Length: 132
Image (cartoon, rainbow, N blue to C red; front, side):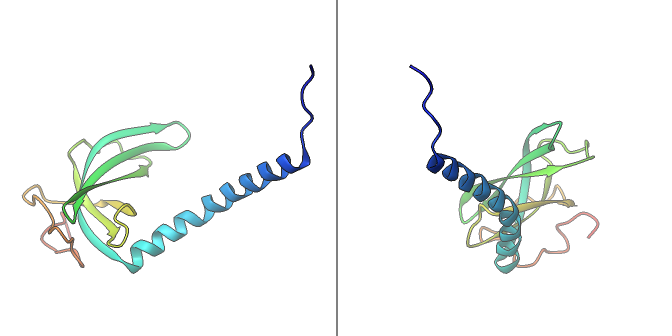
């Protein structure tokens, strides 16, 4: 028995799925930034893991606390090799969707600060960030 001929319907489905993934790849970052901007809160994130590839650079994984739960996030970074596991930075996140977050490597947190409030900060206190 030979191969089954490809159908036009299957080809169209595959084409639409590919187009959908491409569109989602462009829309998702804009949606994430908008979600954080409109519903922003701040917390302290701790770097706990590093992954990456030659193509996409290094990805640092972090955790932070919000509403009594541990949230996780990942952010790519290029050209910075000095981050260590346990380093802490300000995390900006959406209080509606805490899974939508961004760690700010440019805002390291003083070691004396143990945690942010359980509900997060509306604005970042000046005495938390190194050099702020």
